[in-house]
Image 1 (cartoon, rainbow, N blue to C red):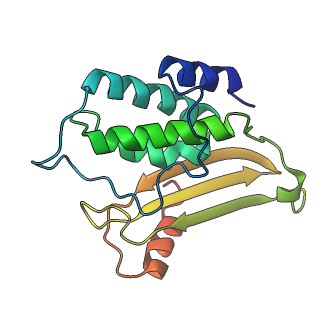
Image 2 (cartoon, rainbow, N blue to C red; image 1 turned 60 degrees about the vertical axis):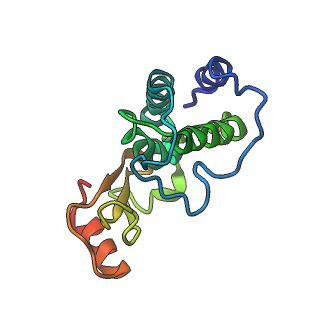
Length: 173
């Protein structure tokens, strides 16, 4: 499944059809924070339209951008120019990867006739504002993708191992 046409319309709408193609959804090490006193506010309406448009693609067929857009969506009420730059970066990533497809069935994930495969991962303190971790999970049954999610953990983990154990324990994420 893909949304090539939809993503191209997003790029056209925000005048990014010819922007530089980027290899990551967010800049490496990007930690967006709430707007600071010395930052310039940005056009809230345009930012919210961009977040909503990209979020639709993320929920439908693009789990690779789910984390990035969920983080940027937290600042939709009061975005700064730094948040706008992060949205532009994400649009550059979408330009490079607009032909990515969501594979619903992968025979490599079917180990036997009753197989359910679950992958979970977490970062340590990925949320700059609260020091909480972000969990991610995918679940495949008989080689068919049935669930993918990313969620901020409610507990503050003391180590990477603890963050990953929390991600695994909360399989629902």
